[in-house]
Length: 115
Length: 107
Image 1 (cartoon, rainbow over the protein chains, first blue to last red):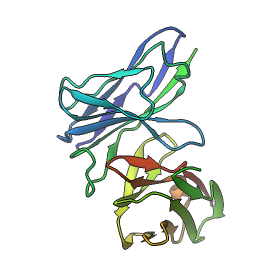
Image 2: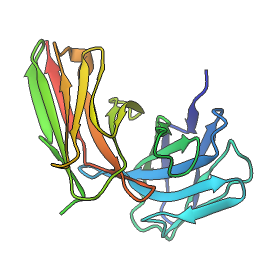
Image 3: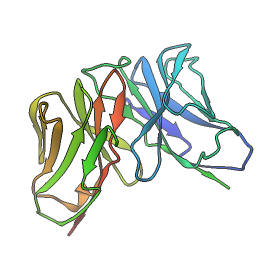
Image 4: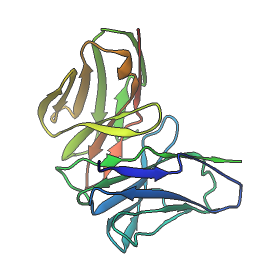
């Protein structure tokens, strides 16, 4: 079955460390997204990619980095510059960026905690 | 003020009750999504609509473009409906999300 796989489900990081969250999709979608979810708040867009080897900052990109070397993969690195990284991170994909007629598909998320 | 507001934030009901979750937005949109987030965190898309009403099983979603308001209804609610329901609107290409409504259905 096609879908989005995020790993790991739970991740712990020491202060000052970078950590990379994995997102893989086999839906053949061009567009991929990373969102952050905090308690009581709506999802916020961190980065998005419309096509391989291209990505754009979202609303809260500071302290994060991404790459899009393959269509099916869009890893997110939470750097030590991110001052409050503890959150739930969701990856999503869609057929095209900004499509008005297609839904986004979501992964099961990664919960990142700081030790 | 958030661009997308949901109410209520939390809702607890007994099995079998009719459930309504509301979503109001302040921006122009091309489509509105209702999403369901399970306790484990995964999100599934329930509806995408730009006008009128859609029905899937016991779920019904309506939207009033003039009033900038949408509702999600659940008929004959069941404990397995317990989840967080999220409204998201598509403005200038990107999605803007509400904060979610946590629904708990007790047996």
